[in-house]
Image 1: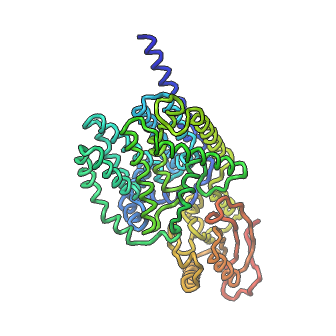
Image 2 (image 1 turned 120 degrees about the vertical axis):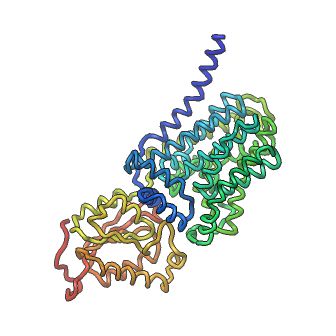
Image 3 (image 1 turned 180 degrees about the horizontal axis):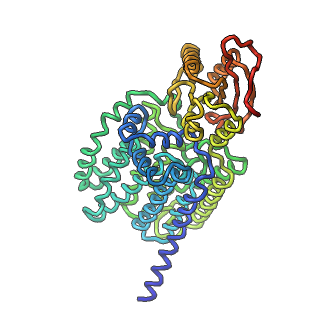
Length: 515
């Protein structure tokens, strides 16, 4: 008995090691990176009332549950970078724990659980979203929790009841929840019809969000999302293999990612074609791939699939439900296309690659520069009432980092959150020039101090059109180039202008802030 107890303890400790390391990687350096626009938007939105959050999200593209939770969280822990990101780190850690439990339940293999959990723990994409003040880590947790409930319910009726709150929570967190739920219903119809009562309960609870979903579908805030192409599938696999959102890897990183992609594809194909622990695991592989494929196909109707972003929601179940090749390589208990030794080598290379990905994320990766840009603006010692104009979608970050009582904060184009209208992306003068005129009218109506800073973000020609117009009308004072880690929507240039008063001689500077 003691020997069995000792062996059981060693097995549990062996599983706890990658889980604990993964939690540590998700918890450290939470304030290392600046919040970027979308994260800051989450914080700014969460500072409003629950009703206001709902109304704002009806005009956006995702349900309100995560923002409600973030509001409750910030009321208790504040709005520092560590505080707002720790909620995502918590949910990502819970997803890791749930995944480890699910693999152990499916395989009864300590080795498979360790390998699969390690792959998730070191995943660069999972670390990125674990430290992102957005809904993705929460949604990923709800997806794997629902999968856990499905497996538990299949084993014993009534045991997987928690699939109900998990699925309802997912639908109210991310609209991809509808896709996952639809695939789960198909899976239920073919493989486990006793769960239909659960789906009826979910349908009743989810129906309250249908008007909100229809409202969002009626809008088109996704002009920036490109039409889907089949290469997006490769881009998704590259993300799963270790790339980060908005990051261009070094030459060494590109080679490492390519090797990881090859290993990952071989293991996935091996799992889908031949590798089965039992019928349940084989069918669950369909549930893992189904939502990803469905989301991609729906994108041909309405652009919605963003490689390396939304599709990472399905990363964990994909890894968990294709754990069979890992078991094949380590225990040799299942059939496989490849012999055990090549499988072992593929798994080893993949885990080393994921470890490098995790190290790269924490050591070299730069997410945003909004905090540093705000500090540069503060260092200009502008008088109170100066105007700060942000281009692209960076306004929320400036609201977060700058003193809203000291500066007039404006965005260009006005009143756009997280997306830009298509005519603006195309630099259509029929929309861009009227928007510039509205911006100037707004500034003229302010009780400003006579100075304006343009924080130019992105590479759009419409931004250059704005700068040219202001240069013709105002007096340039200073130009500061800024390192931009995210070229298409992070600040790359600061331009300081003096706004001439009536009667000023163009080009003559009568006053200037301290250097």
